[in-house]
Length: 217
Ligand SMILES: N[C@@H](CCC(=O)N[C@@H](CS)C(=O)NCC(=O)O)C(=O)O
Image 1 (tube, protein in one colour):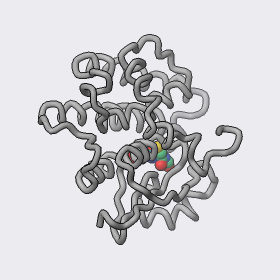
Image 2 (cartoon, helix red, strand yellow):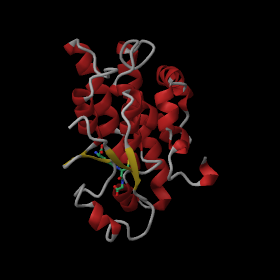
Image 3 (cartoon, protein in one colour):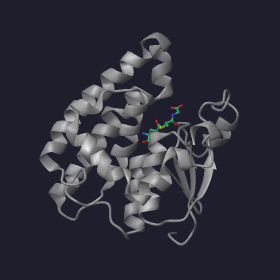
């Protein structure tokens, strides 16, 4: 299975896809990129119907390796970690491993779906959307700041890059994009700064993706 070239269904600005792109880059895994335009009207009913055969939730990312399809970014990341053990992204120590997963969950369950998921935001409405986004990013970042104060070193958990960092980078990008004041989160900001220069982060950045519009490059 690991010898077949993976195909990633992604959207350049999707934070969930970016998590997976960081893992792929960190491990040096070559893959083909298939863009799914989340903004295109009708995507969910036309191209979407085709895509929904891969992911019944109609969301990116989806990763196809051979005849196997994987969805849900965290599950994909854990799969890649097991099948491509080079440049590990989970500590061996069970306590540290649990900390990594804790950070991942805060971001992937406690922040991202609430502040970014289009079906949630459509129901919130344009008028309240920014306030809603800020509320959930701030709420999650307050918890994350405290959590990271207890387990971070150079990166989220100690001094090695882990899956937690792969989740943090895109979430901070979104916070910046929606103009959340990050000066209240010095630990998060410091870790993000350390991560920003890594090749795995720059290569997987939204602006470096083939479907990034020229004006956002
Ligand atoms: N739990 C899923 C969430 C995926 C998700 O929310 N993807 C977003 C982009 S980051 C998406 O496809 N949104 C379009 C939609 O929900 O219609 C994962 O981690 O893969």
